Amino acid sequence: MSTTERDLLAQAGVPADDPKVELAVFGREVEQFIDESPIGKYVVERAQADIEAAKTELLTVDPSDVAKIREIQGRAAIANSVRQWLREAITTGRNAAAILEQERDEHGGT
Image 1 (cartoon, rainbow, N blue to C red):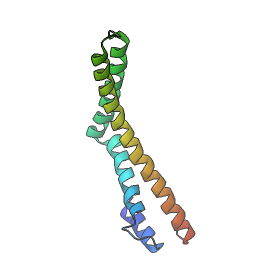
Image 2: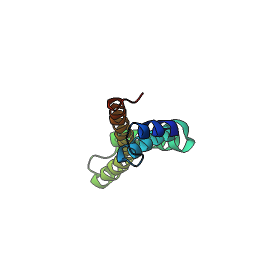
Image 3: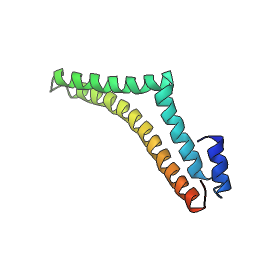
Image 4: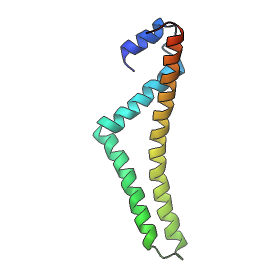
């Protein structure tokens, strides 16, 4: 959320310290992190690669090797959690932004 958007929200009566503003800003920052940052792209690609590697390993692991299966599933679960955390941050931010836009519109904002 740009400074201009923050100013518009303030003019519409939405305090800049409204938690929804912070959630919307954070969600956009996470999106930018994933889309624009080499580190963000790496994290997402690495998580996906780990999940794919785990799927492949599970196809060939000895079905009686419970410890190995748990270890593979654990790696996949961690990678999946990282992706889920990022998706949740983005979704929460988008939802907060939509609520703020609605509030702005209800207060006569542009």
